[in-house]
Length: 204
DNA sequence: TATGCGATATTCT
DNA sequence: GAATATCGCATAG
Image (cartoon, rainbow, N blue to C red; front, side):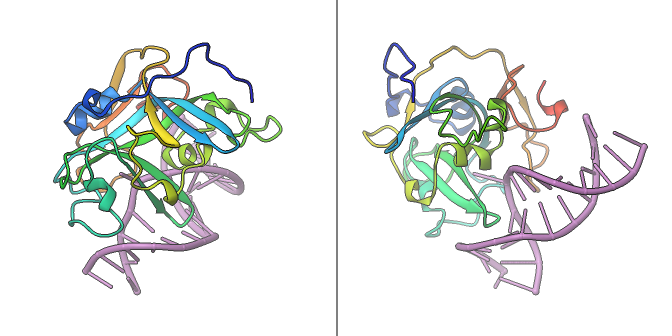
Protein backbone atom coordinates (compact mmCIF):
# COMPACT_ATOMS: atom_id res chain seq x y z
CA UNK A 1 0.00 0.00 0.00
CA UNK A 2 1.16 3.50 -0.71
CA UNK A 3 1.28 5.87 2.19
CA UNK A 4 -0.79 8.64 0.76
CA UNK A 5 -1.46 11.61 2.97
CA UNK A 6 1.28 14.05 3.78
CA UNK A 7 -0.43 14.80 7.04
CA UNK A 8 -1.86 12.32 9.49
CA UNK A 9 -5.64 12.34 9.77
CA UNK A 10 -6.86 13.87 13.00
CA UNK A 11 -9.31 11.80 14.99
CA UNK A 12 -12.62 13.41 15.88
CA UNK A 13 -13.40 13.95 19.54
CA UNK A 14 -16.81 13.06 20.88
CA UNK A 15 -17.56 16.64 21.83
CA UNK A 16 -17.14 17.63 18.19
CA UNK A 17 -20.01 15.36 17.16
CA UNK A 18 -23.39 17.13 17.07
CA UNK A 19 -25.81 15.63 19.57
CA UNK A 20 -28.79 15.36 17.21
CA UNK A 21 -29.15 12.41 14.85
CA UNK A 22 -30.02 14.47 11.78
CA UNK A 23 -27.30 16.97 12.60
CA UNK A 24 -24.78 14.16 12.94
CA UNK A 25 -25.85 12.64 9.63
CA UNK A 26 -25.17 15.96 7.90
CA UNK A 27 -21.97 16.53 9.86
CA UNK A 28 -20.47 13.21 8.82
CA UNK A 29 -20.58 14.05 5.11
CA UNK A 30 -17.00 14.84 4.11
CA UNK A 31 -15.53 13.31 7.28
CA UNK A 32 -13.28 10.28 7.21
CA UNK A 33 -13.73 6.68 8.29
CA UNK A 34 -10.47 4.90 9.09
CA UNK A 35 -9.82 1.22 9.72
CA UNK A 36 -6.28 0.43 10.82
CA UNK A 37 -6.34 -3.14 9.60
CA UNK A 38 -3.46 -5.56 10.29
CA UNK A 39 -2.90 -5.67 6.53
CA UNK A 40 -2.75 -1.91 6.24
CA UNK A 41 -4.85 1.19 6.59
CA UNK A 42 -8.22 1.47 4.92
CA UNK A 43 -9.84 4.86 4.79
CA UNK A 44 -12.53 6.72 2.93
CA UNK A 45 -14.38 9.99 2.75
CA UNK A 46 -18.02 9.71 3.80
CA UNK A 47 -20.32 10.94 1.02
CA UNK A 48 -23.72 9.47 1.95
CA UNK A 49 -25.55 8.86 5.25
CA UNK A 50 -29.03 8.18 6.60
CA UNK A 51 -30.46 9.30 9.94
CA UNK A 52 -32.52 6.97 12.14
CA UNK A 53 -33.61 9.29 14.98
CA UNK A 54 -35.08 8.19 18.32
CA UNK A 55 -38.61 6.85 17.96
CA UNK A 56 -38.27 6.28 14.22
CA UNK A 57 -40.45 3.29 13.23
CA UNK A 58 -37.85 2.42 10.57
CA UNK A 59 -35.05 2.28 13.13
CA UNK A 60 -33.73 -0.89 14.68
CA UNK A 61 -34.11 0.58 18.15
CA UNK A 62 -37.85 1.14 17.73
CA UNK A 63 -38.94 -2.01 19.51
CA UNK A 64 -36.61 -1.50 22.41
CA UNK A 65 -33.20 -2.57 23.51
CA UNK A 66 -32.13 -6.13 22.73
CA UNK A 67 -28.73 -7.81 22.74
CA UNK A 68 -28.45 -7.36 18.99
CA UNK A 69 -29.21 -3.65 18.80
CA UNK A 70 -27.56 -2.73 22.07
CA UNK A 71 -24.84 -0.62 20.46
CA UNK A 72 -27.42 1.82 19.10
CA UNK A 73 -28.10 2.77 22.70
CA UNK A 74 -24.50 3.67 23.50
CA UNK A 75 -23.22 7.22 23.69
CA UNK A 76 -22.78 8.95 20.33
CA UNK A 77 -19.69 8.01 18.41
CA UNK A 78 -19.94 4.26 19.02
CA UNK A 79 -20.23 1.81 16.13
CA UNK A 80 -23.34 -0.33 15.63
CA UNK A 81 -22.59 -3.14 13.19
CA UNK A 82 -25.14 -5.77 12.21
CA UNK A 83 -25.62 -8.37 9.55
CA UNK A 84 -28.48 -8.24 7.09
CA UNK A 85 -29.83 -10.65 4.49
CA UNK A 86 -27.29 -13.13 5.76
CA UNK A 87 -24.65 -11.64 3.52
CA UNK A 88 -23.81 -8.04 4.30
CA UNK A 89 -22.81 -5.99 7.27
CA UNK A 90 -23.94 -2.44 7.86
CA UNK A 91 -22.25 0.19 9.93
CA UNK A 92 -23.93 2.91 11.91
CA UNK A 93 -22.66 5.61 14.24
CA UNK A 94 -24.73 5.79 17.41
CA UNK A 95 -26.03 9.32 17.75
CA UNK A 96 -27.84 9.64 21.06
CA UNK A 97 -26.74 9.80 24.64
CA UNK A 98 -26.37 6.67 26.73
CA UNK A 99 -29.69 4.79 26.75
CA UNK A 100 -31.22 6.55 23.72
CA UNK A 101 -31.53 4.35 20.64
CA UNK A 102 -30.61 6.22 17.48
CA UNK A 103 -27.94 6.23 14.83
CA UNK A 104 -26.61 7.23 11.47
CA UNK A 105 -26.14 4.63 8.74
CA UNK A 106 -23.03 5.10 6.61
CA UNK A 107 -24.12 4.41 3.03
CA UNK A 108 -21.22 5.33 0.77
CA UNK A 109 -17.54 6.25 0.85
CA UNK A 110 -15.02 7.73 -1.50
CA UNK A 111 -12.01 5.42 -0.97
CA UNK A 112 -8.80 7.20 0.05
CA UNK A 113 -6.27 4.69 1.38
CA UNK A 114 -6.01 0.95 0.89
CA UNK A 115 -7.90 1.01 -2.37
CA UNK A 116 -6.12 -2.11 -3.59
CA UNK A 117 -7.12 -3.99 -0.46
CA UNK A 118 -10.73 -2.95 -0.78
CA UNK A 119 -11.30 -5.80 -3.14
CA UNK A 120 -10.40 -4.19 -6.39
CA UNK A 121 -9.72 -7.40 -8.22
CA UNK A 122 -7.66 -7.08 -11.37
CA UNK A 123 -9.18 -3.72 -12.18
CA UNK A 124 -12.62 -5.14 -12.77
CA UNK A 125 -14.33 -3.02 -10.19
CA UNK A 126 -14.40 0.73 -10.61
CA UNK A 127 -13.18 2.70 -7.62
CA UNK A 128 -16.55 4.44 -7.62
CA UNK A 129 -18.30 1.14 -6.93
CA UNK A 130 -16.10 -0.19 -4.12
CA UNK A 131 -18.04 1.42 -1.28
CA UNK A 132 -21.26 2.45 -3.02
CA UNK A 133 -24.06 1.23 -0.79
CA UNK A 134 -23.93 0.27 2.89
CA UNK A 135 -23.24 -3.42 2.32
CA UNK A 136 -20.39 -2.73 -0.06
CA UNK A 137 -19.01 -0.06 2.24
CA UNK A 138 -18.66 -2.53 5.09
CA UNK A 139 -17.15 -5.13 2.82
CA UNK A 140 -14.59 -2.69 1.40
CA UNK A 141 -13.66 -1.45 4.86
CA UNK A 142 -13.44 -4.99 6.27
CA UNK A 143 -16.07 -4.17 8.87
CA UNK A 144 -17.87 -7.02 10.57
CA UNK A 145 -19.67 -7.89 13.78
CA UNK A 146 -16.40 -7.94 15.70
CA UNK A 147 -16.32 -4.16 15.46
CA UNK A 148 -19.81 -3.79 16.90
CA UNK A 149 -19.77 -1.51 19.93
CA UNK A 150 -16.36 0.00 19.25
CA UNK A 151 -15.83 3.58 20.39
CA UNK A 152 -14.95 5.51 17.23
CA UNK A 153 -13.60 8.39 19.31
CA UNK A 154 -11.17 6.24 21.27
CA UNK A 155 -7.83 4.81 20.27
CA UNK A 156 -8.53 1.67 18.34
CA UNK A 157 -8.67 0.08 14.91
CA UNK A 158 -11.79 1.80 13.71
CA UNK A 159 -12.27 5.53 14.12
CA UNK A 160 -13.66 8.74 12.67
CA UNK A 161 -11.33 11.35 11.23
CA UNK A 162 -11.62 15.01 10.42
CA UNK A 163 -12.29 16.34 6.94
CA UNK A 164 -9.60 15.61 4.38
CA UNK A 165 -11.22 17.52 1.54
CA UNK A 166 -14.12 19.80 2.36
CA UNK A 167 -17.58 18.70 1.34
CA UNK A 168 -19.49 20.14 -1.59
CA UNK A 169 -23.16 21.09 -1.30
CA UNK A 170 -25.14 18.59 0.78
CA UNK A 171 -28.49 17.43 -0.56
CA UNK A 172 -31.22 15.36 1.10
CA UNK A 173 -33.74 12.78 -0.05
CA UNK A 174 -35.98 10.05 1.24
CA UNK A 175 -34.19 7.01 2.61
CA UNK A 176 -33.43 4.00 0.48
CA UNK A 177 -34.94 0.59 1.14
CA UNK A 178 -37.03 1.49 4.17
CA UNK A 179 -40.68 0.50 4.40
CA UNK A 180 -41.78 2.77 7.23
CA UNK A 181 -41.69 6.56 7.56
CA UNK A 182 -40.94 6.57 3.88
CA UNK A 183 -41.71 10.24 3.42
CA UNK A 184 -39.05 11.62 5.74
CA UNK A 185 -36.06 13.14 4.00
CA UNK A 186 -33.38 11.70 6.24
CA UNK A 187 -30.81 10.68 3.65
CA UNK A 188 -27.93 13.07 3.05
CA UNK A 189 -25.30 13.04 0.36
CA UNK A 190 -22.72 15.18 -1.33
CA UNK A 191 -24.38 16.48 -4.46
CA UNK A 192 -22.53 15.59 -7.62
CA UNK A 193 -20.30 12.95 -6.04
CA UNK A 194 -19.82 9.94 -8.28
CA UNK A 195 -19.41 7.71 -5.21
CA UNK A 196 -23.01 8.05 -3.99
CA UNK A 197 -25.41 5.09 -4.20
CA UNK A 198 -29.02 4.90 -5.29
CA UNK A 199 -30.89 5.55 -8.53
CA UNK A 200 -30.00 8.58 -10.59
CA UNK A 201 -32.92 10.67 -9.41
CA UNK A 202 -31.66 10.37 -5.82
CA UNK A 203 -28.11 11.38 -6.64
CA UNK A 204 -28.59 14.89 -7.96
C1' DT B 1 -32.61 3.40 -17.01
C1' DA B 2 -35.90 0.79 -14.56
C1' DT B 3 -37.87 -3.13 -12.52
C1' DG B 4 -37.88 -7.97 -10.73
C1' DC B 5 -35.97 -11.76 -8.32
C1' DG B 6 -32.93 -15.06 -5.78
C1' DA B 7 -29.35 -15.76 -2.21
C1' DT B 8 -28.74 -15.95 2.55
C1' DA B 9 -28.68 -15.78 8.40
C1' DT B 10 -30.34 -13.68 12.24
C1' DT B 11 -34.03 -11.89 14.91
C1' DC B 12 -38.57 -11.41 16.31
C1' DT B 13 -43.57 -12.96 16.24
C1' DG C 1 -42.87 -18.58 9.67
C1' DA C 2 -42.04 -13.80 8.29
C1' DA C 3 -39.39 -9.85 7.73
C1' DT C 4 -35.19 -7.51 6.64
C1' DA C 5 -31.69 0.00 6.58
C1' DT C 6 -28.87 -5.18 0.13
C1' DC C 7 -26.54 -6.61 -4.05
C1' DG C 8 -25.91 -8.38 -8.60
C1' DC C 9 -27.76 -10.35 -12.45
C1' DA C 10 -31.50 -10.81 -15.85
C1' DT C 11 -34.78 -8.88 -18.73
C1' DA C 12 -37.51 -5.30 -20.93
C1' DG C 13 -38.23 -0.80 -22.78
